[in-house]
Length: 276
Ligand SMILES: O=C(O)c1ccccc1NCC(=O)[C@H](O)[C@H](O)COP(=O)(O)O
Image 1 (cartoon, rainbow, N blue to C red):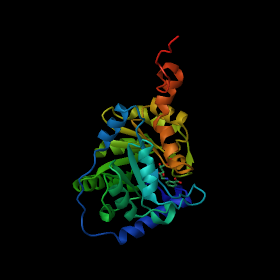
Image 2 (tube, rainbow, N blue to C red):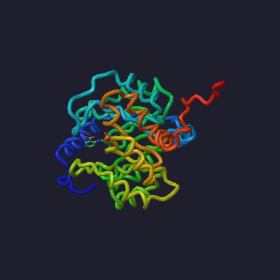
Image 3 (cartoon, helix red, strand yellow):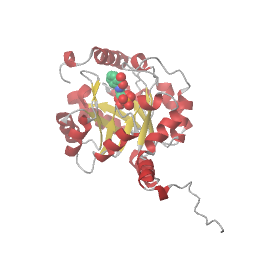
Image 4 (tube, rainbow, N blue to C red):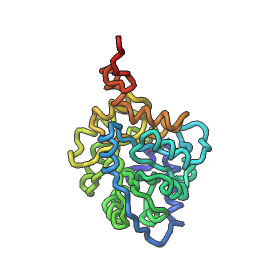
């Protein structure tokens, strides 16, 4: 990992808490039979939905307040809104998450569930079963190949998160097949959708590519898709207000634009002939 002093104070605090939790991590290795993430994206595409990983994110260092609703109810609303997969924050101190929520959400829905946390140590992988785990290239540094292998041995699919071309190269060298480009700079906590646009052209075609963070509107969703995103990971914009409607607006971002461009595509239009 590069110089921790270059990270935002909130992120240093997140990492320090993650290391403390690693000390108390489980000792028995989990064994997962995962739901296929790529297949879930394909199902969404076939159905005319933008593949969206909707994130259960009660709070965060860049969010005001905490959403106190039952996370399982929120997860079900996300699926009703067309989410192809879910992400559940399990970091307790800065994001209001916990590992029990992943298990409850996974029991309640049939889409793949990503456990979103700041894993820095192999034993942390055993805290709970999920279909996908996140490894952040910047945080795990040279341990990425070993952690990737350890996660796969347990059956997890792995989303490797990068922020620039050097991290992308490290992810590809380590054998990552699903890569997320985070638009949020963890040094400044500033979001710039141009990050995805600058890194995406360098991602090999056989890698499943996910645009993460800062996607706030259907126009943003279309922008990320035009830049090559196979799927989008969205938290704040979905959690702010009506979760089902917010999810639907993003999963329908392309279908709704097609409908706008072609009024005859509106399936509510009555095409029966009126007798004269
Ligand atoms: O979201 C934050 O404030 C944050 C701060 C520090 C480190 C990580 C952070 N977010 C983690 C995430 O990966 C996002 O929750 C995820 O990409 C969704 O982002 P968004 O749609 O912008 O909520």
